[in-house]
Image 1 (cartoon, protein in one colour):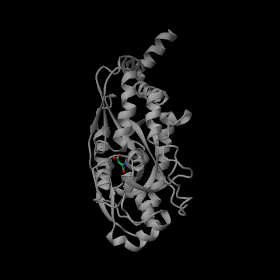
Image 2 (cartoon, protein in one colour; image 1 turned 45 degrees about the vertical axis):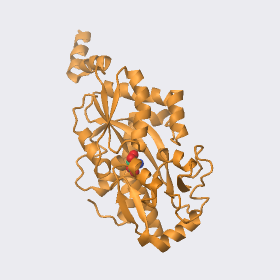
Image 3 (tube, rainbow, N blue to C red; image 1 turned 120 degrees about the vertical axis):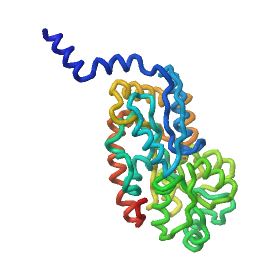
Image 4 (cartoon, helix red, strand yellow; image 1 turned 180 degrees about the vertical axis):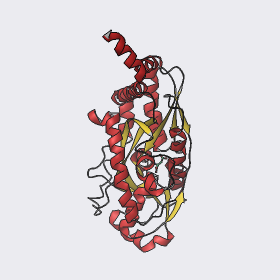
Length: 325
Ligand code: ASP
């Protein structure tokens, strides 16, 4: 009798269906929407973890680049997708932290419209410039940017993107306004920085290590308290005399709200296995990514983290006096 009652209760809660679904899932390829252009940090991180997750899940993970509006176009599409585990999103500090403060009519709420799967990587921010940008170090950079602001172009990946908001912090602190050039992601922005068509950028480390090491661009500082093992020669903003400029970003996987809990758990497990896989880990670490550990890997942690990020960015953006789109 008790057993029957339990079965009925479980069925009413959808647990039965959920359990069966989780066992069968996934039966076809899983799409991860990357809201920026191919080749940039969000795309690279999605492809690195996605490759290993495919092995665990036994189905291909297909990256779909849906670009526009600082990543909010792709995330809006993903938020509205059928919540069946076959459409996921690789969001970041911009799409799930800064965007609400910059887009008053944003069609999703980062804190309510998603099932957080887990953090994929932390990504320190660096101040970089084209290789023949005149300043030699961060001190000279600050003086040069202040003196030449009207002539300087700054690349970013659209309003509310990481590169936009983190450079907004920087230029606000320096009291300057630069000419902004928006790209579909910092992959294409980096190409133009290497080509010298734009002057400078603030971006996630995973996009930059190779070009800094190869001397194709200049790195002035990394905005974290400690240097990165991936770029041991690049000084911190503290060392360089700009300690007030410290900021980091991150990328994380999300599913649309109401994706069944067993499916989200399966995805979280596959992501965590990817982060423990030696090859995947090494690829992320070589690019300067910070691999989340322990508690930081849970969906609950990511959910709370997103709330904290939205709360953190709103006053920064208000202080910078930027009007929403
Ligand atoms: N790093 C980028 C940003 O600035 C986007 C990208 O991943 O291409 O938000």
